[in-house]
Image 1 (cartoon, one colour):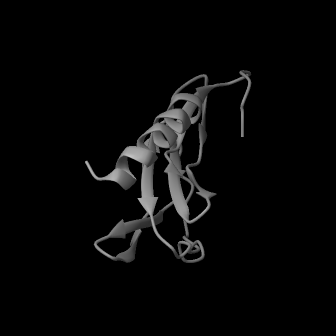
Image 2 (cartoon, one colour):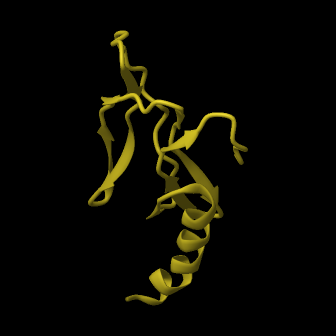
Length: 103
């Protein structure tokens, strides 16, 4: 593990603990603008929006997909959070309806 990864590991763990799974993406540049995707209504399914991922030294688009609904739950989309020049992807997650949502 490099010195940089040792420094980032606590940040990723802290974010994962309070906001779901986090993936640390170390870049000097921001991810490109979110792409617009067209999703059709599918009864019993939720569309999970696509997002940018790091592939080697470039940004690559990971397209959205459908997932079955979970009764009594709502899906919270994932998002990038910026800390200095670090970009941290916090994965989307299912939460029980009526619970407290921390953003």
